Length: 101
Image (cartoon, rainbow, N blue to C red; front, side, top):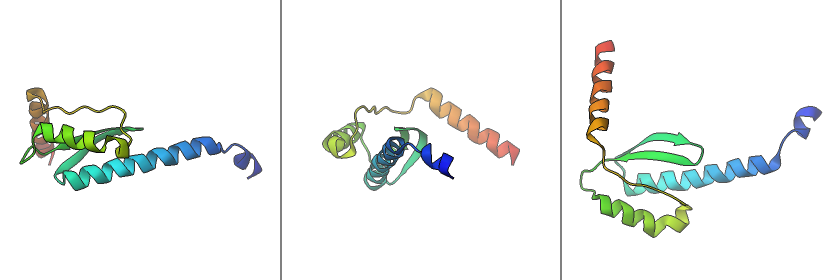
């Protein structure tokens, strides 16, 4: 117990907790602003969401993020439409999944 206790780095724990709180604020913002979304990827403090285009314009997404950028503590972000290749890959993955059962 003493060995484990002496190896705890409080700075790293605080950094991790702070990052998790930031991610929670972002997650809640996306879910509230764009209820029809999917979290596609998360690596540390980077996330990738897919937002349905039904009734949503890409410019409105930029505007919403810019308006809330400071509160969300976002340093960098990107917004793009789904490419034709991505659509093809999603359909291929769904077809493969259906084939397997």
